[in-house]
Amino acid sequence: MNNFFENKRVVVTGGAGFLGAYILDGLKKRGCKNILVPRIEDYDLIKMSDIKKMYDEMRPDIVIHLAAVVGGIGANREHPGKFFYENLMMGVQLIEEGRLRNIEKFVAIGTICAYPKFTPVPFKEDDLWIGYPEETNAPYGLAKKMLLVQSQAYRQEYNFNSIFLLPVNLYGPGDNFKPESSHVIPALIKKCVDAINNGDKYIECWGTGSASREFIYVSDAAEGILLATEFFNGAEPVNIGAGFEITIKALVEKIAKLSGFTGEIRWDSSKPDGQPRRCLDTTKAKKLFGFEAKTDFDAGLKATIEWYRGQSNG
Image 1 (spheres, rainbow, N blue to C red):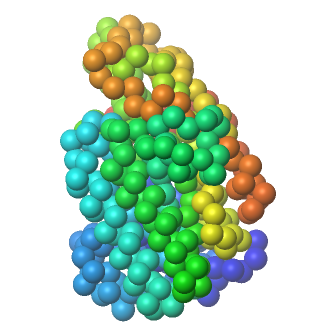
Image 2: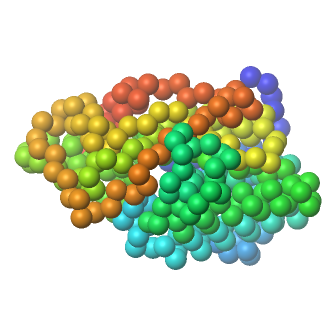
Image 3: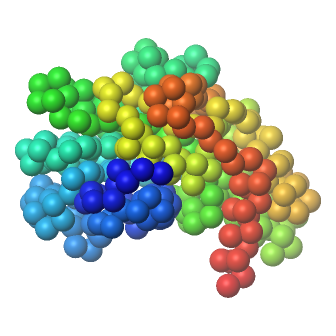
């Protein structure tokens, strides 16, 4: 550990969220003394006036921009306009104001949804622009992707140090388990654990189970983001992933087994599968800032299941 963060003022937007908690923990472990989290009650980061107020009051050297309006396939289908506008305005204005104030570094967190629907697997960063994203989450994915365009344009014109990272789907203790907005792993864990608690004979899952996904344990993702913040100062986008894929069908079976659910798994094929496959090429992150995911998938799932059990029994 060097003392890169020790005397830096680091603003973490979304620091009160799932990934944010792990980023804050990682910063503390690295000796960062000035970690600042703009709370939504105090700053609406969609409004430029609140962004200016945040910069005035917090005076960051570095901004790690995690805040996002997110959800699963259902939420994306219901709110494409909101997801586009709010994610775009937050990011674009935070970067612009950061540039005007000459901050040291801006870390923009993108999304796997920015990739084209039919990207060759594993997804390489060079393939980001070969097609249109999967329709159900394209507005969100494109809003985030614009932050890459902005970061590169600002580096070129203003020499502004903004980097762009693409984390794959996160999971882990502290995840969002609300049915209306949760992602696939917490949604499936909730279904299995709740079915056991309620004595239900079956669970119902969206789609056909044939789509594949990649998942990264949240503390690994936080470590990747912090390593990039410390050591990476380049224009190109970089994937943050675990470098493996699993079909949704295999994932459901694994979660059922690990949670002890022995009932029937029913598939509602009238619901969408989303993007057909997702798996990242993670060689760039290792090469550019020495990041590799370390958490075993089964071990990570077990920890997440136990955490949810603790919450639902508490």
